[in-house]
Amino acid sequence: MKIFNASGTLYKNDTRLVFSLVILSFIVRVIWLLNSYNSEYDGVYKIMIAQVWLESPHLIISRFWGVNDWPPMQTYLIALSLLIHNDPVLSPRLINLVFGTITVVPYFYLIRLLFDKKVAVFSCLVLILYPLHVYLSVSSLAEIPFLFFLFLSLYFFFKFKKTGDRETRNVKLLVISAILLNLANMSRYEGWLFIIFLSMFLLYSEKKEYFLLFITISMVFPVFWMIGYYIKTGNPFYFVPTREYLPIKELASHPMMVEARALGPKYMLVGFIVYTLHYLSPLIGFFGFIGVIYSLRRRYRAELAIFLTLLLAIYTFKFLNETARPVHRYTTILGMLLIPYAYMGVGDIRARFRDTKYHYIIAVLLIISIPVIGYKYGTYRADHISPGAPEVAKWLKENTQIDSRVLIDYYDLDGLFILLYGGKLDKGINENVYVMPGPRWMPNRSEILRLLEKGSYLVYCSKGKLQFLNLSPESDIEYRYNRTFKKEYQSGLWSIYSIS
Image (cartoon, helix red, strand yellow):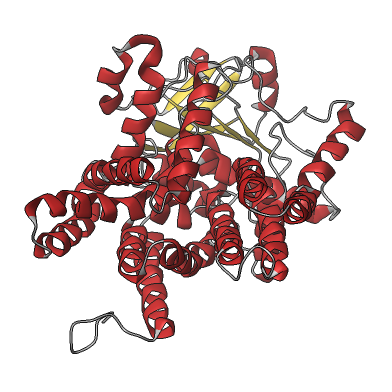
């Protein structure tokens, strides 16, 4: 698929170029969709929330089911997908596939606006192959719609700033940016930070009227959300995590973090930078940070570098303050802000060689490094679920009734995966299916035994929370607690027992 014409220069027609990038983005994500699972715990949980909402549609003003205080946009989007085609396994993933594919459009135009066309093409090619973005594009998590609305909002914001002078700006562009930022805010709370970032840009360099207009419109959803929580709980900030909510002990255990941990209290900053480098591709990250340093030192094309620096500082503060934990997908926005600076970093190094051909050679090598290095580590393979879970889920779907009573053990967040792919969400929330919560919840033996009534099924993990049942992988029939446990199927760590 060409993005260069016969003379070797970029197409002058941006529409054809962007369309080519969209098609390439779609192909990459469809290939990944067909070879992966929707295995993220939070993603499956969001599907369940949407199914509950569909039973009684209403305007979401606060948490209405479950234990998570997520903004409502992903609930609406998943519910829409289920209304169009009621397949909880596929439909929610297709919504993200669409948003993930078309994100290259606002991303291209934003980077072209702030940098130039060559940087925009380079950045989009990297984004198309960015392992984390590809992986999230075929999940049911909220990051992908959030990034689409955010970068579209940023495009209109900087288009406003670069149109005319202070007295003749196109205010419509600023209004559109603020509306789109509300949609991003409805997807993930990180968007709220950009209300502050962009408002400060306006306050520093534009008329106060623009600042007041933008902050008034962009605060519509946050104020609405806080009022909703005040009505429900008496605390407008109830959804904000506290130190007790996320213990800092749940730090990332990736091998690349080991050296960072040895640095002591400062390791969080270094560790999250390493995290970002690893999941983007170390080479892209390396040149990206060189480009960021170059940009900030010279105050040249530094808009996104400023956002990157502020976000990294805020994340680090939250980690050190024990109100958040490093999660791989939190680096996606940092990676997308970093990508165009990788091209600048290459240019900075190339200048030392005084030969322009090195710029293009290194840029091509960086793009190639994404699949070669990024996927080599297996960072975002969606099949990281425990051995046997897919096979057990398939057996459950094919050999049990939709309304069969099933108790699913907890191990490494795979219970909801088995619930989804075992067909137990095909007709909405199933009152006859129970999934052990975790990780800090401990099972109540009497309650568990009450659920294991005759005619029910137990999906048991040899390393799960129900080990007190002491079921042996070698035995086909066992007698425990006045019940007969007959093994129907076994794969990997998981076994299915019928209870009689």
